[in-house]
Length: 111
Image 1: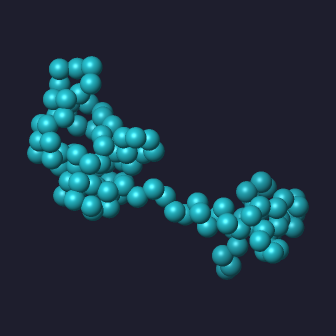
Image 2: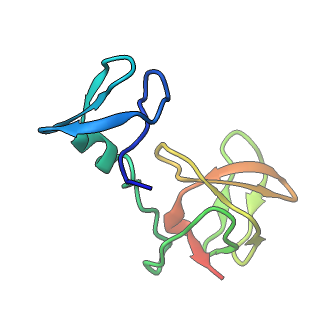
């Protein structure tokens, strides 16, 4: 089986390379080869120690964090299981006993 991707328009696999583009023989759609290579590279999220975080990792808070708009404080040392990486300025989505939160990776340490 070849590495040539299926057509993004008609999703059929009858495609071939032509110069710097891929071409679908069925629908005639053309798309550049470079975009398929760049889609594999995602933003890397690192914790406070520089360890790369992934979906499903367990982390610990390294600092007390005040929850905006509430009197709740997430205490240092709180363990958070099964994080999820998201796009945006707060790169980590997690669930704790206090609720669901979006946290910045700079306040987390991978366990």
